[in-house]
Length: 389
Image (cartoon, rainbow, N blue to C red; front, side, top):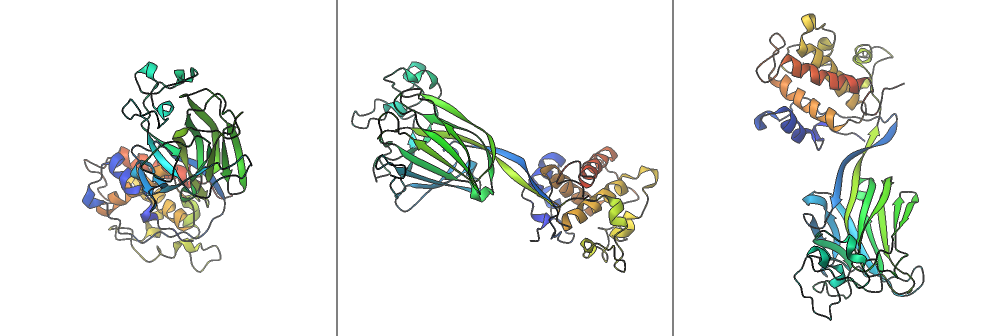
């Protein structure tokens, strides 16, 4: 599959924040950079997120129940479902999704028939509305606002948790896969000690973590071992010593995105020596670059690559590493956010730069040298997917 370097999600934002590019200078005008080859692969950890159900965009179905959440209003959806337990068997769950949002900081007193005081945060001993009948509230010391529950009824306007327990599912397929850090569980009563979190990868179960039975209105941060490759998590509330039990809620699902590494990189020396279409050594990553000039330099990409940077000309030092990096991406090598940002910033620079007078108040020799160093480390395999063997 071909990928377009100009569409990297973090490029423009990162360059604007870290390199001070003006908005009108962020348009990239050089050829589309398309890669086709994946010579190796791996995974690295990317940005980390926490689903809090507070700042997130909540997606509901026609019945009003939650089917997805977008962390901090992002465009990537985490799928959400919740099912009531209907019996004592391992597969006794309803097929009707009743995932709902519960406001744990709502005003008190709560009507007796609602039976939700034990989900409120913080506990009353810390100035909140949470009530514990068995002393478990000592861990519930902070307001947690919105949380996810298995709804008690088929009316989402009545956000009450289901006393007989069940399971919740969170799908991360839209992220590819993620590394799971932790999840917070509220109100695992003393008789509900068999709750668990099951982490799934594409090949099946990766890991299982059980809750502690900390008591009524309690809070536990369940550590998930920084398990990587997770595409789905399932949270089981109950059963405990009472086979039909498992009230409670979850919150603060912490995970890190995973960046897929692919391809590998070559240094500028390789690209100099593989640029002749008449040679068997020719690398067709050059196809889009042999017959065009390098920005406004008046000479081609290959001529730039073959021009020695006399006197340490930082324009040429940066240009050599930039061209090698672009050809590596064309050849299928993945990047990193740091490399993305430098490529975008360097593109902005080259659009207006003059090789003979490469520096200005905004683009200093030191700045260009720093960018060249980042791209050199990428091309040499010290960051990114690694050097080709």
